[in-house]
Amino acid sequence: MTIKRITFLQELLGLFGLQERVHLAWISSAEAQKFVEVVTAFTEKIKSLGPNPLPAYRDAPRAALAAAAH
Amino acid sequence: MKEQIKSWLEQGTVDVFLGYREVDHHPIPWCFTQEAIEEVDDLVVSPARYSLEKIATHMAAEDPDIRIGMLARDCNNRALNVLYVWNQLRPEQVVTVEANCCPSPLKEHADCSYLEPGTVGAYKKAVGIDNHLRLEAVEAYGPEEGRNRWMYEFQKCIKCYGCRNICPVCFCRECSLDHDDLVGTGPLLPDIPIFHLVRAVHMAGRCIDCGLCEDACPMDIPLRLLYQKVNRIAMDLFDYRTGTSGDQPPFSILGDRVTLEPKPIQPVTGAEA
Image (tube, rainbow over the protein chains, first blue to last red):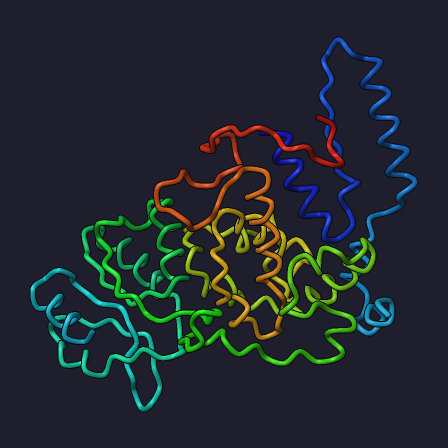
């Protein structure tokens, strides 16, 4: 069920190009090494993607947005 | 049709009949009863439509044993199925009279206010989302463009709650959109896109694509496309076909209790299996 919930979320966020910012992985408590790898890789990915672009839309005046869309 | 409805009311097959009555040349939603049976003469079937099943839900909440007759198009029937699934109405308490519906290649004449798409201006086409596009076309926008276009649409929202209030399948007593911790209710402008996405997630497995929300929206936000998207996901991931039957389990993926049957997982992109 979890994977479907997460896939649901990813698909929905896909409309806004944000699907890569959600990640799901199964890691057992015995897999410390894997935990480190997954978290490090995801942290780097998020860093390379930069800050969440959505707050800018909330604050930006509409005209600026319209210009950006052209 | 009028004779049949009259006889239903007279014989007590139904306690009330929900339809439209012409008042001063305007068809308005009306509750016909045995006490005022002459009003049935003014019953009209016209392009005007309203979520009559929502009125039925409110009535059943007050009086669970009430028997309700209803004028129903295809969209009303799909909504009724969803309401049966969620125990808001019981199939045995509802009788419907079928009314003409949306046009199709086989049926050119139709009675539905959604028939004539409003014209979409050039500006909206350029920077927003044309409400009459197909979902595939909207999905095909790139990440950046899709985001710009959707956020342009959401920014117009004046948080009138019209989409929720008209929605035939919105029946929750407590609405997340009224919840301060979730979406921020006080200020005039809604929290975007959370406001719309919360509603979208709740429409998965519920929205029957009647388009009343989009009809009601004063800002012309392409809500139908958004809800088509979540229902497409519900179908792809869970094989859940909203509104097709009153016998399926309710679609519930939030919270701890899950009522859906497990289904094999389809290959997905972006998630680690």
